[in-house]
Length: 298
Image 1 (cartoon, rainbow, N blue to C red):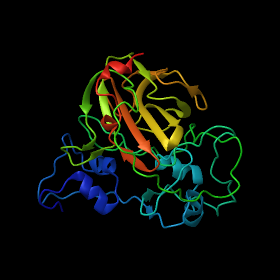
Image 2 (tube, rainbow, N blue to C red):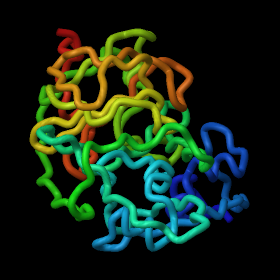
Image 3 (cartoon, helix red, strand yellow):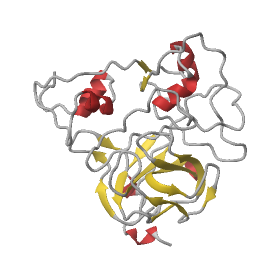
Image 4 (cartoon, rainbow, N blue to C red):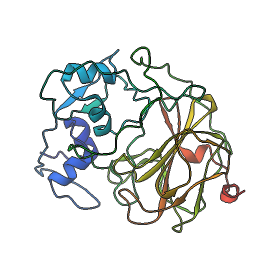
């Protein structure tokens, strides 16, 4: 039963049911505003609350689920770190006891580590909600394989100090109008980045030099996605692209074209969803981009 002024995002947080699952189960339509007293169907998705010291590997074994299915269902990207208190959706349990599985993938030798935190749900101007979970049926696409297994299960990483806002730390990845701002949306959801409208085919450029940590479309909702790891624990994310021009492991320079603007994933209009993170911190991109978008093109 919906309380006064309650949003779909708050219902999701209280019930543990993903926003997209609530929207689909109740046939809700934009802008997804709820009415006081409205009855909602809450899908019963099995979940697991991450405890201190747990890893994705230990959770998969304790819950009797397949490791990489668990990673895909929760849209986790390498190295699949999970923080205490996070609610994970569980895929169907395997029919037999789990055989010993290799530890989580490690980044290729000699290259910077991949982002320590999973990419947050992508929001759009209209939806402002996380993408729907990946299908639970077997898929051809899987989590990108590692070159060699890690020696020990991953442990929680230390929090990096909060960086002060600095205009120009990153260059604009594309020029265009911001149609989705960082922060809480009118629908009550949270946008962890910004959405920039631009013509289809417009070059998308690396906001700073770094190494491509991920390039693909296995994460449903993001469409063609690129993650770039930068020195100092920084990471930038570029979603809803058209064709990708880089692959995992590529070293890119600031301003290098990495993709073109598209409308892949959960969006219907050409745009770029752009995020900036440092360690586990989600940052407002506008605090670290140049005051003018003129620097978006070299």
